Structure formats: structure tokens, C-alpha cells
Image (cartoon, rainbow, N blue to C red; front, side, top):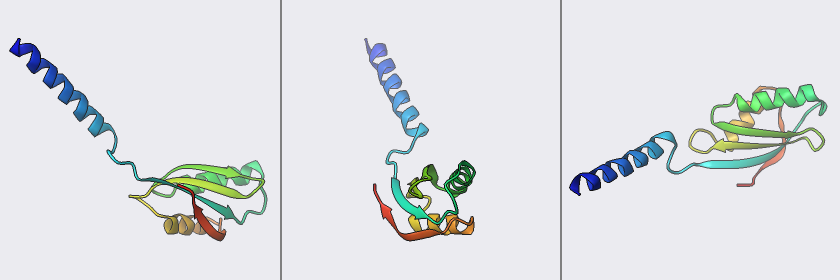
Length: 104
């Protein structure tokens, strides 16, 4: 009986350690929406903007709307912030118009 209880405890602890080791306990994800100064909303420009955003350390996802010129960026707040994202996009020839809007 004791052996079975011990095995169950080891199994539960193994699962807990597996979950803790595979992902952070508290995801610090945030989202920001910005209007980007783009010459056009063509697929080539959208792909370049998407690549530029994803190349910034800490950026997790990017969604570009060519019609509204809005880009929504999901990022890890522990690795980057809005100012670094704006700076990174500007350095990559995508300046931001107006104030970025934190949406999450």
C-alpha cells in the first residue's frame, strides 16, 4: 500500500515539474496597437513589416492590416516594451504615427 502511494506522489511531482519546466508560470504577455507610416498596404510591405516586428526580441506575434495601416503586436513584457518595439520598427523603416494603444 505504501509503495502505491509513493508511486502516485512521484508521478504527480513529475507532472508538476514537467509543467513548470515547459513554460513560465506567469506569462507577461501584452498587446499594443499602432498605426504605421507605410507607403502602401501591398502584400510585400505587409510581409516586410511582419518580419521587422517579429525580429524584435520579445515580440511573440504580429498582425498587420494593410487597409487601416494598423499593426497589433503581442509581446512578452519581461523581454521588451512598447518603446523598444516602436524604436525597432522605426529603425527598420516603419515609423509609428500617433500614440501606440495598449489593448491588453
